[in-house]
Image (cartoon, rainbow, N blue to C red; front, side, top):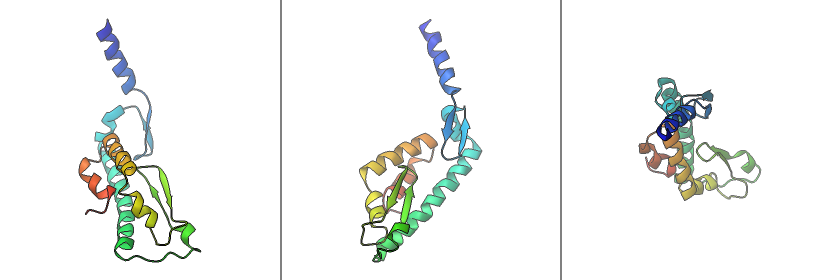
Length: 133
């Protein structure tokens, strides 16, 4: 009887609706959703958009630029892995707060969870957690 309840519980858990941040859709497929071709395409687009932000941050890491106080409020990055808006107000250089956020332990933890949950592959963790190519 206990075994039957476990099987039913797993079926119910699979059929629960979940929101996929990558696809921007609700689904009832559970963890299997991350293996579907549409999800993989959406994930590729999702990661490549954030990858362009990383390239911009790397540019300011190589060529530090002083950030004028008037435009500091417009200089910000949304970290998709942490659901966190990285503001540059109060920093002296462009992307200074982003440069300190990306290699942090908290970002690494949330990045690994994101890759596990949405199927990005752990090979990308090094790229999105710091400044390795």
